[in-house]
Length: 527
Image 1 (cartoon, one colour):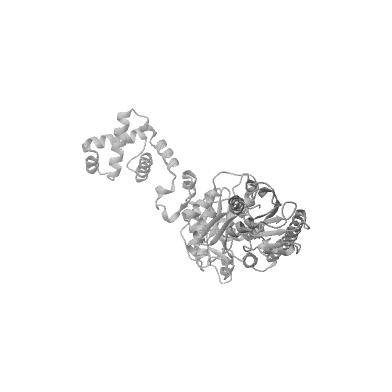
Image 2 (spheres, helix red, strand yellow):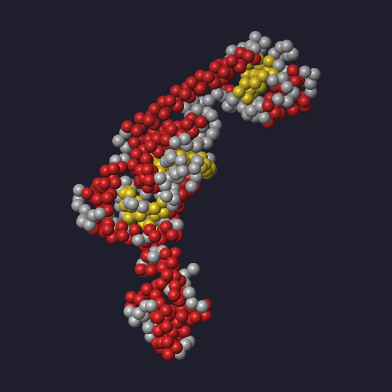
């Protein structure tokens, strides 16, 4: 687990945070607000008698001063204005001016400057020490922290309770949306919407933006942030936690849209929700592993039609898109791993392909899935350490059981080429021929073995024999056509073909021999 989320502002979502107005209500009544420039956030209270404390200030602080920096200059409006301007530009929330030992009242120049720069001004009598103001602020922030902890604990308990619901994922999305006051969408591994909740006061996520955020999150290990107008969208990949050396597959994507700036409270709540979504995704993929593998094995070996009692159960095992066609996918690892980790591969593939029907074979995996053989799917598989070959699609109906064997053979036939070319394949985009079934490197090796007696000849004779043999085979054994193909007299063609048969020790009158030599020449000419 351990997901990343943005460190944003620290204001609790359910409490107003410390503001100047809230703080003033906690102070002794002797303190007077001489100039009210409006309420504003208050981060800290700091006593300072420096001429220019701005290099040491954070935004939204209250500065307490005895007036010492203005001694001897208080009648100079220009210098007083410069002092107050520096505080205003440093985003000081308020200035507390202490009476005594240097002043008995706030100088008019100070009051006028605070009015000019819209800086709230407090008059602090000698009876109220600066330390008492600091203690009051500490008590207020402590009370806020305690309230925030209680709110966090209750919100986390509410999320945990979702796991006991019959539809835990939907309930988790709904609860998270209500607690965050935000729009929440849970997406599957292909970007399809599994569950969503949009509140009237929160940011609605458009389909186009959802697709864009999904694409960004699916290739990221952390969150992505997107701003649009006054809205903030955070998107988090939900990934499995795997043993060292394994790639974590994408289990889904959580997209949250805010109409306000997300807070630390939101950050904590999202982190908890991500962990729970991961647990649910892995449970959904790996539940009843032994029974689903048995069901998959029986289904893949089937040659009979499916009855009405089986079809609903099959749909429940195939994820969300019950009306989509299905394919057989044959999956192989990019790099061979420890056989003891096969259970992890099964769970990962169930999540990646959104199906429970995944079974292990001697050196590969096989799955029945709604997943489509698109480039994004190929990229996700490769990023998780897998290559896959997909059969043609067929509808989920009673005849599916009769077609499983043919689909499986179609997908399994792609394995050698997948491994050689290190890429996933779609059977519908692969040329259908006996030539296409043999991987290029293996075909070239076999071609060299078949034509070795010719390839070992001196260069001039070797090239002549290869040209004559290719021209004769292209002419389908016609002496006249072969003569035209290679611009050589037909008697010379006859003589060379006879010599080639002797060199190869093959009967070129046999069709199967000619076919084998034609394939060998074809592979030999491939780049």
